[in-house]
Image 1 (tube, rainbow, N blue to C red):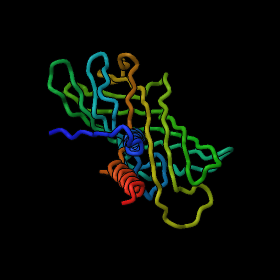
Image 2 (image 1 turned 30 degrees about the vertical axis):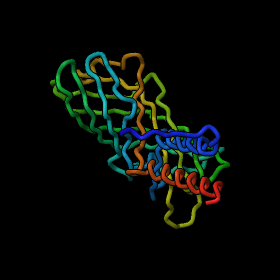
Image 3 (image 1 turned 135 degrees about the horizontal axis):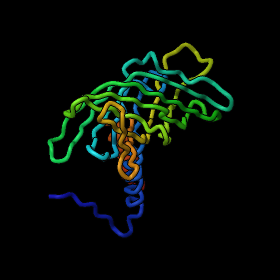
Image 4 (image 1 turned 90 degrees about the vertical axis):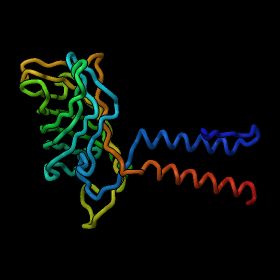
Length: 242
């Protein structure tokens, strides 16, 4: 039997509370947040996971892309700069994905490559830092059922931008203590695919982007929702004198 939400016409408080929980749910999904003790960016603790569905190139389609930094020592700590804070990281990555060619079964693929990401956060809201970011370069080499493998790169002619939010960090002169930071990060990546070793490149159809998001801790979004639901329930009991 399917559960149904029934609201009486005069129960405006519960209706408002339901809207609040719904809004928090959408926010938690749109901005997944995880906790880390590493203040380098991009944060190495979580992979970037494709959430935009499937992108289609001239020949194959690609989905379920996952990117992860493989050498955290290459990543940059943001430094104070004119008007704010900046980072600039060039680093090695590994990836896995699924590719589909026409009527063939989907093929799991994986490989390695390099990435270059940078960002700037204006000062004035410390210890909250909101970095406008760019994935400057991404060059991946993978294996596939096509002889010679394939290559995937960030478009050299389009801007692949994103946002990284870090709460609780300290950049610049800081006490020598371990801090817990809360991180949200995503990129919208314009890509091109090559099946002939880089001789020719296929852009995505309709200029589709690959939206990648750093995944939250398991169940993290549900903890936020449970907390919000608990607060709503407590307020409801208080209003009713229970």
